[in-house]
Image (cartoon, rainbow, N blue to C red; front, side, top):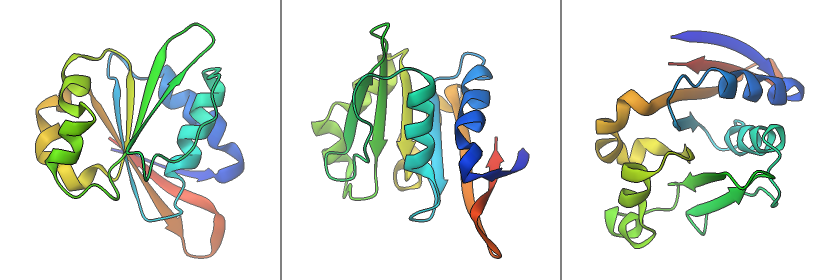
Length: 143
């Protein structure tokens, strides 16, 4: 596990560093409280990757798919409002995670870790935590 202090202003550089060090892994599990920087991280990463569409939180849609200027796809999921596995079946989550080589970013993965754990060899966990005395800095744990 690696811990870093990341200023929100430098989140783009941090996102690039994560992307450059995927080493064949394609599932990023993004953990943290509301407002801790998960969606902002995805937005900054997508900017680094030259994503053409607008990046937004998929809280109500559960899944947003973005495409970059080379036509590569990135799948952004948010499990915050997902009630049960049927919701994930409806959007084709099992097929996506089983067969996709695309980058998959999942916010609030803790709700369905049992479904994800067999893909641990393809995952990177990123935990965003608030710093008590500085609203612009996050303690980020990666493993």
